[in-house]
Length: 245
Image 1: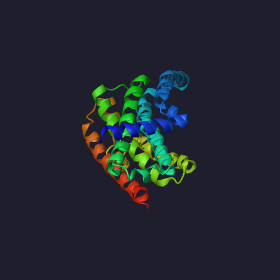
Image 2: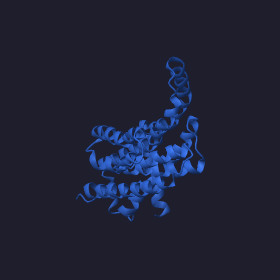
Image 3: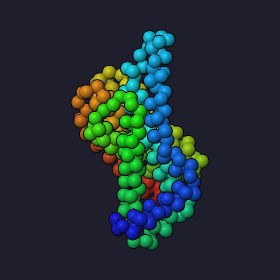
Image 4: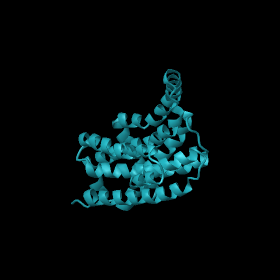
């Protein structure tokens, strides 16, 4: 992709975020949530232990598995709404007469949420101070989890006719993204049935890494499943939006 085209896309995104600052503030939510976890969860754990003898620390990996998918979900939502803005402004139609191909545009739109979602997780996760894992493990897990960000953005843009409906679509997509947390309570190998959902694999890798168990196989499967889901989402996006008159 030419540098000038990339600069133009970044500038356009900046202007869209400036017009709708709520979307920009939403991007800070993963860090805010991480700080909230750092302050509240240990205190809640102490209270539960003192009041009823329940040790919440046994569920810390479960809580952080949910947090792992938070940043990709939020970033995917923001990029999805940028897609909707561009569609309403007929930017996608205008791009057809520019030197920038739709495939290159789509590559930018996939790379941006993947990188931002992964980066947000790498910043936010250590801030929680809960269920620490080695940075190399966190980087690999965050990358696989980050694949859900562009997938969510593309499906949101394809499925929502407008921004109002987009919020309803986001709720459904984020629910699907977080659904695999329920697999935490199911023993292996039965737990692997949740693997039909892409978000399960980075969560499973995190649970294993936190317990000091092998996790690389889960990451490899997760990367394959996540890429397949991303390709399908891109195909849906192209079919429903880019190929319309």
